[in-house]
Image (cartoon, rainbow, N blue to C red; front, side, top):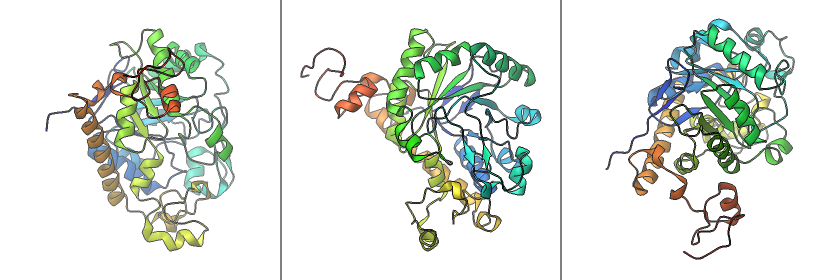
Length: 383
């Protein structure tokens, strides 16, 4: 019953109005297009209920999401789909996407069956035609260009908004240096499998760095630059593979300031609900196994642009389910922090961790359980 804090402030380095979150768990960018309008509204409702933020994703801001999100991050991607200066000003923070852990070095795709009239209008695209996103900003070739763009975004928004830099964890050390040079408030590091949409399986499974390995590299880079967990430092939000409160606690202990969830949030909303099992089987899947989100045939109505299917989704109920899931994640992280004698979840540190396998010890750079040995360092010894 000892008090254990969970609040976190993101973006105080340069933003005049940083985000004050009640929990260190945010909702990752998932676009209107990839998700239905009611599902986007539910994300805003659920995040607001527990005092955290959600993110627009590619393709612009919907009135439903803005109306139900107390703290909304506007995602600015290479495609510039849905880019609207007025919406940038309405947002509470801006996320500049440089890469995604599920497809580092590769562009995204939204298949034509999900390009409805409304999605096409928001993105200035022809209806029913596959939408392809560039893998990089066409006019950015380095840190100088990014610095200019960051300055433009700050001037556009009156120097009020925190600005995130989202990078896919592939060459993390160099990417983090790029983000720091840009004067970012928050560096959002997206690990392997950190995404949905129409990524190729070979990309999701074999390209990119697992979150467990990416985070220590990012922390090391910031430490060498003297910018990790300092008053004027760069903050880290880690995403990719966060499923439960233990994952949250481990990420915070390894040096993250917050975590972000995407697929897990979709499941919490009600995706793969067993009551739609017959319909999942009718399209060749089953409840608990469906992941063909790009097809736009999700019976729950959460990842589709089919008006009939989307009408099934209740954004109020979905928002409550998401809020309950976020509460459980937070309580689990608090339980672990209390067990380590911490008064706040962000007080967790690498010294609170040991690894159960040699692979995990090597990636996380923490000792193998029962020893003080970190693979790749000095020889093992028994504790």
